[in-house]
Length: 214
Image 1 (cartoon, rainbow, N blue to C red):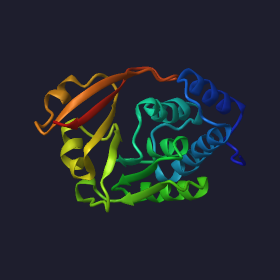
Image 2 (image 1 turned 180 degrees about the horizontal axis):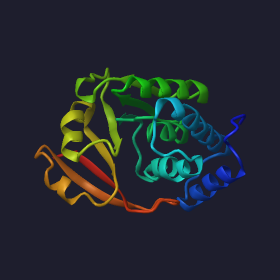
Image 3 (image 1 turned 120 degrees about the horizontal axis):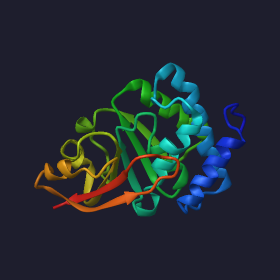
Image 4 (image 1 turned 135 degrees about the vertical axis):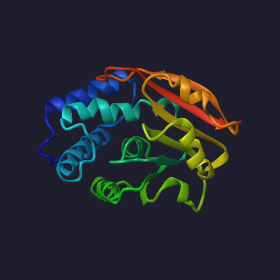
């Protein structure tokens, strides 16, 4: 890793966080995750990809937060809607080399960064598309559509329902338990489960809402 931002503190934060999450991530994968943090920091100055400026905070708020859903992820073909700077898509693509991750965002500067990150990290299982999700017509539908703080649940379902196979799932990564949003879900879909996530180095609640066709 040649990135000047990467130091022992960042490495320890990542290693310890992954241990707390009980995730088996190889040294090579950890190096790629740190390299990605370095790229985020570098491009953030120009592209304003994230409000989080400090690389130390990025480990918890971005990397560990994204990877906390891994134990519940059994899909092969994944769409990350509203990926922004590649979250959770890039960490998931690094951690799950056996899966295929497509990252979608309507902002060109963000997809430009994600494309560059995919190239620099040498990810063979990640793709990026610059498009609004409601206009996106994938060649093949996805097993799983995931979003992280992208939109209200009903908007997420209404805009992305056409991209997932009938037996597929939606993963909505949320903060506090979204009682009101669940109450406003369209009748076409229902909540399969809501999982409370415990993410190291993060204050505040985290929940994963798993949705499927009713």
